[in-house]
Image (tube, rainbow, N blue to C red; front, side, top):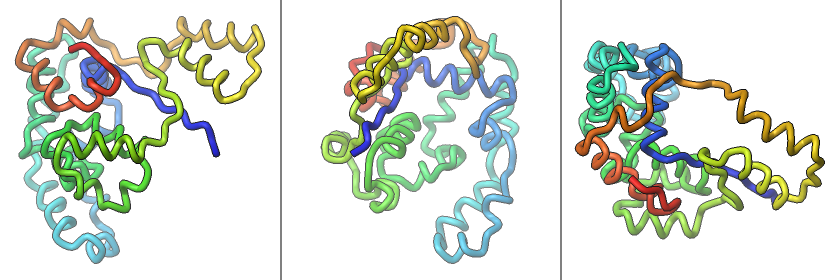
Length: 226
């Protein structure tokens, strides 16, 4: 009976921001990609429960090209670094590096990391399906979203403050002028910012096409233009 709110962002912007944040040596994904992480695999319980999956992830930590990943984060001014990073992100052989069980999901065969995270956050019952192993096509994912999406309202990053006010109103809050002004004033006080150029600085035709193919679900659901 709760009013559930989520947020979404243009996938082109999402990937640039995620990468640029790592260029400041920040973020969980940066830490995962640029270091060997055996501590998260050291649990005997995980080995017993996951078996071959545990062993695969352990071997990957040994073989993971963390120096190559680290090289892509050296300079947010270098568009080639971003493009190399993005191609690694979408490389089927490297999807295990991303963690979060993305590589073991069936949707990783056709959908990108952003779509996977979206599904983890906003669809119900999917963990009971063992990381989407029953969803093998784009059409099946769309149908699953129709039946399982929990969101009553979605805030777009591009209109963050305005959409937040709408969401609060829809969920029954009585908004005073002081609350409205406080939220709108936050436009000038952004936090957790990553330093980077306009997204067009980083993308070429090839990398735009990669995003449009892999994040088709998010792009079409929210009518983003790539």
